[in-house]
Image (cartoon, rainbow, N blue to C red):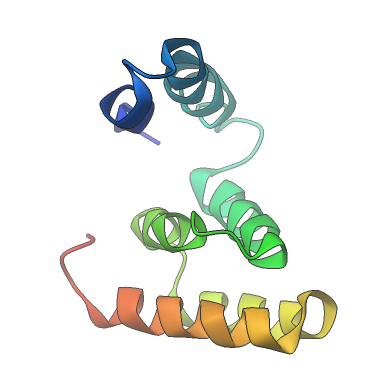
Length: 109
C-alpha cells in the first residue's frame, strides 16, 4: 500500500485522536505496510473476507481498496460465493451488491 492513510485523523482526529493515530499509523502504517510478508492483494482478500463475515459497513471501503490493490472482479465474486455458505446468504447478497457497484466504476483506479 503506497498511499498514506489519513482517514482516521480526517474523520476522528479531534474526537478520538489516539484511535485515529492507531488507525493511520499502526494499522495502515505498520501492519498493512508489511508487504514482504503478505501482499496488499492478499491482505485485501483477507480483510474483505473478515468484514463480510461480520456484516459491517467498512466492507464497501475495503472492496474499493481491494480493487485498487489488484483484486479482480472474478476473484471478488469467488470470495463472496465461497463465504456465502459460511457467513450467511444475506451477507453475501449485501456484499455482492457492494462489489457489483464498485467493479462497475472506473474511478477507483
